[in-house]
Amino acid sequence: MTLSLTHAHGDRITVAHAATGTELFSYVYRPESDWEAPKPYLHPVRTLSGGLVTDYRPNDHRWHKGLQLTASHLSGQNLWGGNTYVHGEGYLALPEKVGSMAHVAFEEVSAAGDRAVIAERLTWHPHDGTLWAEEDRRVEVRDVDTGAGSWTLTWTSSVTNRRDEPLRFGSPTTHGRPAAGYTGLFWRGPRAFRDGHVFTAGSAVPAGSAVPAGSAVPAGSADPAESSEDDPMGTQAAWLAYVGEHDGRDGHATLVFEHAPSNDHLGEKGTHPAHWFVRSDPFAAVAPSWAFHEELVLQPGDTLARSYRVTVADGAWDRARVAAHLEGLTW
Image (cartoon, rainbow, N blue to C red):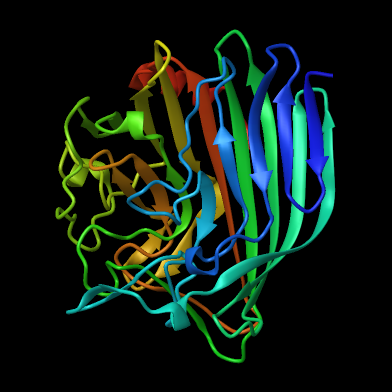
């Protein structure tokens, strides 16, 4: 068996690669601080050679935890954690708006060969604890390639609105702050990955340059080629890669984030899978945003289904290598 799985009940599930002896990630589902909007997350996440590619509770944003699904502005509530952005007033401490996502049960926890599966049921709650949504989540490890020095993680979430009124997914940008469209699946990279190299199939940010915090692509821009060639923030592309250099050991790591082809949804500005939220300064972060330029509205009883793939690789991959690798993978 190439992959092994260890379940510390009530705390975390850890998936390891036997051939290299590397713990690829831990899926932590124990509740944590109310102020940080408790929710399950993956940390630490490592490459096959053991290089760390996630951060946990950094001093600038204590609620950033590895790789997690978030909802920064959800019908007036904050399931992201920390301060809440209010247009014209900035970020405010509003604990009465900070909600949570709670583990209910695991439907499957298994590992066999080169595949491991964590299938979970969760519930989403505003601060008062009422039920707003139910989620079916599936996190899966596959495509372990020791020759390429890479493995992939797929994340699928189906969120069903259990309210009697619509759930409105937004972001600081939909509430007035430029280039802050974070919501949905969110990755926080380690401190060493600041000023990393960011690129998609059609745009790139050279290593050491920052994704400007105040820049924004005009609403409705549907193709990175139609936007700034050196700033993918707020643009669309099927995938986005982030290359960072490690502290404490030599070398680099590359993470590639992809949308599943089935992720389209129809909004006022057209059909789109998502727009990218990405920063390389002052920290490394990526999110295929559910609500960058406009809110996503989920009607009562409706289900929002989203799937993503994250390739975690040793080394500094370039655009050609990423494209060739992704061509060999199937959803």
